[in-house]
Image (cartoon, rainbow, N blue to C red; front, side, top):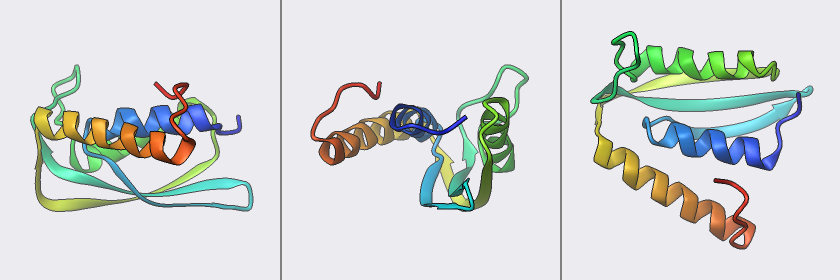
Length: 111
């Protein structure tokens, strides 16, 4: 499966709410490579009670791509001392949507 604009935008918006930040991206030999940072701790937990932060969140991101059968490389670092809250997630989502709107000339097909 090839990544398209809507998939990338939707992924970015969803992950921004959990504090995952794509710090760099490149495509090499047909593989999408993402450098992502994640918060050390979070107020959010998944259905199994795992905190949605640190390496657990990084693994969840990789599982998303694997499930979609998208050839990717994910490199992740934990932002030491960063605690993610619902308020930070809401602000990050608004900021990312505004950035996407600026880049795309206010296209509204990205969520």
